[in-house]
Image (cartoon, rainbow, N blue to C red; front, top):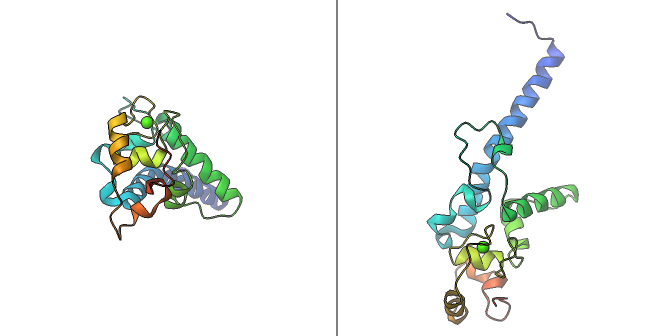
Length: 160
Ligand SMILES: [Ca+2]
């Protein structure tokens, strides 16, 4: 049996907790995304690939084996910025802050893409012009939490 000094045990325990936290962060963030958009989130977006690039790695060792797509990178970077400034940096707060941004530069705001079932981190997946026209015509249901977000209000939506 290997002897580990008490001080080293604490460091070892801290590093194990830190690595476990980073491994569990993605499922927690995915769950937060699902809670935030609730029934407005399509099944296709209730997946890791909403924030991460697809991977064929069957034996991942860390989150580095699952790089972020542009949307995931933006969420991650914003979380670090908010944390450094001591502001609330949970997933709902971050999603609201980048709702009108266009992470994948496909011309459609992040939240518009999400609500129309398209990946905000994949420029090859974006709503067709017809979907955007129909979305502009729809009035948000009264009393729903999600339609109160600015990107769904016809006067503030930046759908082109
Ligand atoms: Ca997209």
